[in-house]
Image (cartoon, rainbow, N blue to C red; front, side, top):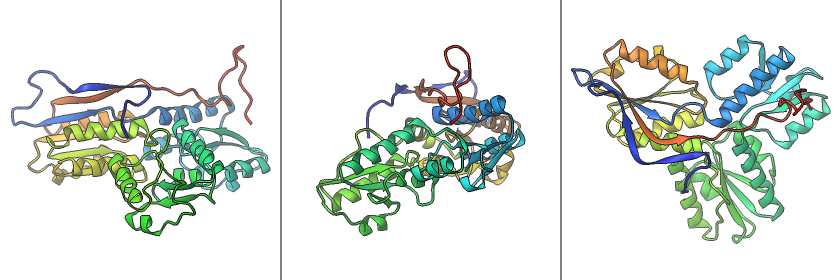
Length: 345
């Protein structure tokens, strides 16, 4: 997995910005990762739900969490969004939004059978993996999907061609998979995994299947990769890394793992600043701060304020890439050229 991500300008060198003398007298400082927080897919999904509320009024139903972030979900719930686990929980004829993680064809079919109005907020990068599954299934490949069991994205991706897809989560799974023709095996992956973890599984699969084909392009999304690179760039200097994100966010959990693997002495995942255990700060001079791809930056700013109150007033931004990618909103809520709203399916 190499090369620049679409819409991303890689920094030729790691850039560290901060005001001169920003480190406090006792050496306390904060290294703030950039990029961090919202990716284009998350921004698109959240704005989609907000626009649906504005256009059609509450209640708007959302299957699963629109994105894996407690603050975002709670805020939308207060505005009239009803989150459900299954499409069957949505009243017939009501409006339902499919989350950024994507759904299987069976879910689309069920919604149609029940006469639901739907808006699909699946991240375009997840949709790309769905299309790859269909392409390789048509060519009768056995597809090794590297991902975490039970994750909504994995369920939606597998559902595109369940008879062709086998999930590879752990090293043990590599030993268990079976294929019909070793010359027709390909690997794909969940978009929010650790790049290093994914390639470890790929190497293990290639030991069993030397002819294993690679996906036509990287499946790990640009934002997941960029956030991991930024954490790696600062981790070795950090006594503590704080990752703002929710426990059900795969990419946020991976940032904690990446920080520790890259040399941070300690790292923790938190939803809010008040979840920081002050004991974590004992003997700490440099705190690294970042956030998962589904986290609004207001939560990071609150954490920086919390740290400043305790003496970590100097903030230096560690920049490893500049993201410029954006995605159009789903066609169901975009306005037509003449200004009339598009119809909801």
